[in-house]
Structure formats: C-alpha cells, structure tokens
Image (cartoon, rainbow over all chains, first blue to last red; front, top):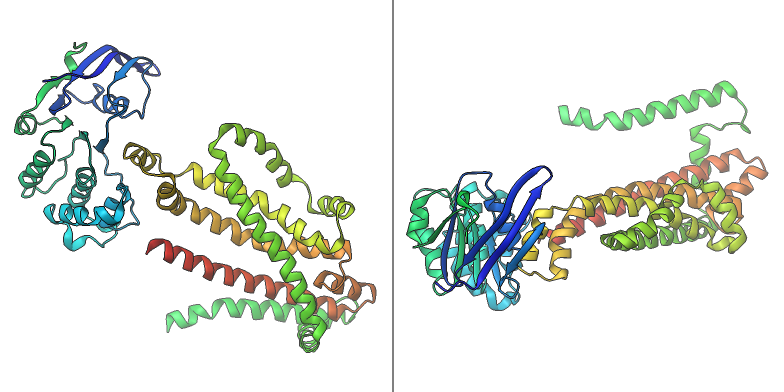
Length: 199
Length: 249
C-alpha cells in the first residue's frame, strides 16, 4: 500500500447536522479501498469531497486534483435522451478513437444490442451497467464507485464485477458498499467509516 | 368517428363566434361602427389582389420578425451569461424594467430616438427580449445539477455540456417563450407602426383606414394580422420540431 492520497483533518456540517469532525483517511494510489459503514455516516459526502463536488468546512483533500478520475455515482446520471453509445462517447475526449473501446465495453456488459436505444428506455439493471461502462471506458487513474452493483441483474453481477476488477488492474479505486463480499472480491483495504476519526 | 367529431369542435367554435359577429353587425346595422364578417373577408380578398397589400405585409413581417429573431438570439445569450452571478445581478434590473414598461411608453420614447421605419423592429425586440431572457434563465436554473456534476468529474468540454445537457433542458423553455413572444411581437410591432406612422406597413394602412372611417378595411387588415401571426407561429413550431428532432439524432 502506497498511501499518497489523503483526506486530512476534515470537518463537514450540513446545517446543524455534523458529518465529519477531524476525519482523516489515507488511501493507496493502486488497488481497492472499500468504504463501509451504516447509512447516514457520510460515505457519499466523503466521495463528493474527494471528487471536488463539495468543499469541506475545514481540512484538506490531498493528491486527487491531478488524477484522472472516473465515477459511478449512486444514481445513474445518464443523458436520458441520448443512446447508450452516445452516453459513453459523451465522456470521451476523442470520440472517433474511443468508439471501438465503447463498443467493446458495451458488448462485455451485454448492452451491444441496445446501444442505439435511448437511455430512458433502459431497464434499471441496464442503466446501472451503462453507468459502469461509461466510467470503465475512460483512461482513469482512480475509479470512484458508489454502490455500483446495486440493482444489477443477479445473473450478470459476477461478470460485471470481474470486468471492473480487470479494468482496475494497476489503478486505484474507492468502492462504497454495504456488502462485505463485494469488498473482499476486490481484495479491498476495508475502511469502516463509523470508526472515525481514522488515521 | 369520435376523433372526427372531436376535430370539428374548434372549427365549430370559430363558426359560432363568426355568427355572433354577423348577428351583431346586423343588429347594429351601421357599417362605420362594425361590418359583417362577410364584408370584412370580401374586403380582405379585394386588398389581397392589390400589390401594395403584399408590399405592406412584407415590410411589416420583415421588420417585426427581425426584432423577434434578434430578441430570441440575444435573450438566450443574455440568459447564458447568468451563470456569472455578477452579470446576472448587473443585468437583472434592466430586464425587470423592460418587462414592466408599458409598450405605449416605449413606442413614444423610441419614436423620439429613431426613424418610424425602424420602430416596429425595436419595439418587437424590447417586448420579446425579457420574455425570452426570463424563460431561458428558468431553463438554465432547472438544468439537472447531478448531470453537470457528472460532466465535471469526467472533465467533459464546455461545448458538449452545452449541447447535450443545457440545450435539451433549455429548449422547451425557449420554445414556449418564443411561441408567446411571437404573438406579442406582432401586437407591439403593429402598434408601433400605427403610432409611428411608418409608411408602407400594415400599421400605416390600419391608421389610414381609421382616419377615413373605412371600417371594412380596419377589419380586413386586422384579420390579415391575426392570420399572419397564426401562420408565423405554425412555421416557428415546425422549425422547432425540426430542431428538436435534429438534436435527438
């Protein structure tokens, strides 16, 4: 473990509600870190702080700014009027070069046949797979996964998890999950957020 | 069959009000106060056979539509700058004032600043501008913040964000603003032509007809304005349908 990424002395309140008081966390640049803990403990808030979508009241987030980050959010966050393929191409800088990779990813996730369908016509499980494809196709250094396998079709879950594991080889990933088996599948360094402050 | 009967409801309502108009004209029986719909439409057909009718229609149409299009483009552009809090705060009072000034005051003021020929363009412009601005701003404000966050995380370029996130969110607001704005553009533009006495326009013809108590002409020109406004709205809706279709493909 090479902990160059750090969440240091974080304080965060939402109005009266306290989420973090002097929260600290060190993360490896390569490999999985699974963040676990009961709901309402600030797991998604932590992800938003790391992604720069939220600012801490005090404290620092170190080492993430220069990283190429991809994310699978708790919600699918798809462009509803666009096709599955276009949703993937949306996040790629070089669309023509990325088209093959997008098709390959869609095929591996079992979505190739529905690639030209609008995202709003996808089922819940298909939407989740599409959100995963969109993240996995990018050239990321760090993948953020906020309950990424929730709502996936049971039969497809092992295959999709294997795909994620392969794509994260030699890269970093933060996985938010309630399922310890998921965390163990990725040989994750497990962090229980309810035990903070952690150092 | 039921659909056929349902499709006849609106034309039937139109016929009903034409009948009311006709009965009113028969009861009043004074062609200076009111003419019958038959006389008004007959006069419209007579006018339409004359070259100057189409010249006037063309001149008014061009100037008013020009004002409308300018308002549409600049209204959307101004709303786009509202992402900057500074620019939004700076421009908001101007748009609020534009929204509340009565059209007649604007026409009289603008008449002092410019030639009567340009008046209808300017008036259509200032009438439609705040409508487009506020509606577009509302569209921008209601754009899905979670999609914008997603684009930010994946470092998607501004052009793609504008095209694939903002555009679909804002388009319905722009279309609804433009549809109502088009009607306002015609009403205010023609009023500007009447007050400003812009020669060779629909407004000027209306004014002349009033001076000479040619009531049939007043009605005929008014029908022409209603038909023009209706036709422009239909054309605009067709255009927007195409834009929406192109945006999807």
